[in-house]
Picture 1: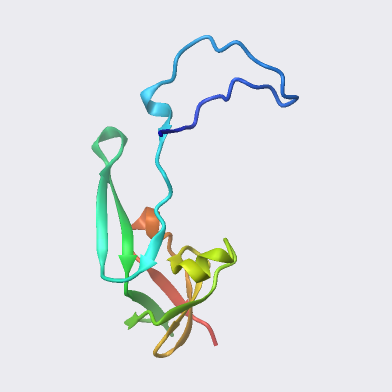
Picture 2: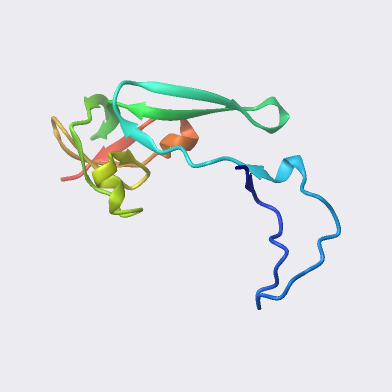
Amino acid sequence: MAIWHGDSGRKRTGGKIKIARKKRKYELGNLPTLTKIGEEKREVEEGKGGNKKVRVLSASFVNVSIKGKSEKLKILEIVENKANPHFVRMGIITKGAIVKTEKGLVKITSRPGQHGVVNGILIE
C-alpha cells in the first residue's frame, strides 16, 4: 500500500469534502526506514529531480565526535530511545537514540534513514 501525502477528503470536523482531482505522483511518500543494528547495509533511492537519497538499513558502527575528533565505534546495544520505547527492544536506531559503545554512551545526532550515516556525540 502506498503512502499518500495529499488531502484526506475530510474536514477538521470530520465532514466530507468532495475531492476535485485524483492523486498525484508527487504526493507519494515512503514507508519509514527502521535502521537496525547489524551488518552494514545501505539503500540508494532516487528522489525528485534525479536526486539520490541514501538510507541506512542496518549499521554496526557509529561515527562519534569526541572533543573535536572523530572515531568509528562499534554499537553494542541500544539503551534508550525517546522516539518510541519499543524501538529499544526491536533494536531500531533513530535520531536521539542512546547507544552503548566501547567508550561509553553515545547519543545519535544524525537521521540514519534520511542522511545515510550514523553519527553521534559521547555523553559524559
